[in-house]
Image (cartoon, rainbow, N blue to C red; front, side, top):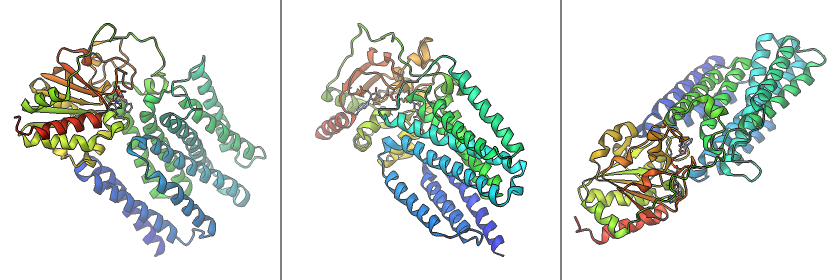
Length: 469
Ligand code: NAP
């Protein structure tokens, strides 16, 4: 009877997990998706806890308390730090899977060695290799994103790097095969711990050749490894919920990584082995060219006269936390009967959905958010494209310059609008480290300054002269 209730609880949790992912598809239902995910996890933990075979000793209670102590402050990090926070969560997931796998092997070895069948050993080894490499790989990724001093941001490369990594992986797999065939041999426990060491080392070596710019994509891939590790754990414990949830995690991480790669026109191999973001002698497109600056008054006047404005947010809006001021500007323009749309590039900012989350926080109606492919055909009819701290995602070099590292990346065609105002603080390049022709175009005027201040000033100017139109 209890078994039946438990299995039913797992079925409910699995269904809720699937709906949670489905509801994440659109901002309209995303909140519901989060609640469904929380409910699914609560049901899963509750049902597992109620299982009489679970040992309810003090250690488990302490582990749950420790989870809360770490988790609650982690949930309060600013939005700009969410990519590294996500990496840390994956590190914890990887550590949990790895530790459970390790405990299971050594426990069964002393208590019931006959249970270490080939099938369970294959699952155990997959669990610990994926779990431990996710642990150190995710810690490295979090360090790069947080710009921790002792973790280099730039790709670290050396001769025969990929060959060494492959040899290391080959060695781990060969040892894994030996332990799988002879799990109870006198040397097996030692070899098992060597495999753990190799997996931990492999996680570090896998990440160091990848630049900070590619970390969000790498995090999605690590997410997928953590999910696969949970699937393996599900096979070890014959737990269907772990298999389902892990498979959802693994596949959604992979799909996300593929979407990001497509949006950057990069291949998986290029992200993982391309050492993107290395210091290269730059071509300095900007040399000898001049920016045209505009005053707040001038820009406000042009905006006031416009009938179609497209706002293109980027990472700078997140840094400045300018979304609420952007909302005020949106209100000012709408009040004048101007059509205002937001053009959202899939990799604007530093994580997928970064701009959507910020704009939703400022209660901007999601019906006015447009995806890149829907905005570009309208661009020639746009009176003003207002670029708010976006750079790479509006760089026309992606369309025209074959030598550019972002060549082929789909961009928002801001340069095709009738006029462009670009807000940024300096003449520094964006994440890809390259100059942007858009800023030197005849139709572009720069509004130098922090995005929150510049937009705030624009709002004041428009509010002050609300009869301008
Ligand atoms: P970006 O190319 O990094 O440019 C951001 C711009 O914002 C910079 O030029 C910066 O110029 C400006 N800025 C920074 N702080 C500001 C502030 N307080 N006020 C005003 N401006 C400010 O950003 P993006 O156009 O959003 O492009 C995203 C990049 O990240 C792409 O290269 C993309 O491939 C990469 N990426 C994104 C993801 C993802 O999931 N979203 C994943 C992987 C890679 P100043 O310093 O002069 O102010």
